[in-house]
Image (cartoon, rainbow, N blue to C red):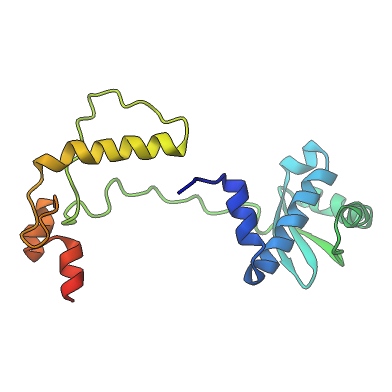
Length: 178
């Protein structure tokens, strides 16, 4: 198994037919940021594509008005960069401010039967340079913890104690019985 960059994976996904609309939007967004200057880029955010019209949120009504007056020039510049042309660009301040994401819960389910007590956090765990190295570190961590876990009575695999306590077997054996 080889790991691919996020850009390659995103490109593969966007090339699938069901992602056509999202692919077009992605192209228009790239073209938007290539055409506008840094000040405009910092104060605008493309938010959608509807009926071949690019919807752009702006930080203020002044920007929205100014860009509305320049929209045909911007439209020509964007369309020169693309195979598919936009019909129009609309500017709004409505979706500029998004509700701040709520604080994630520290631990969503501390009593889950598959949880294993974490390795001591006193150790310095090196940061992985790439995905292969991260996978090796994870596998080594699992191998280190495995001898201390009880064995599933059915398949004899190392199993979190919570799974055996809840189902009497590991989650995989329990799923196979269902």
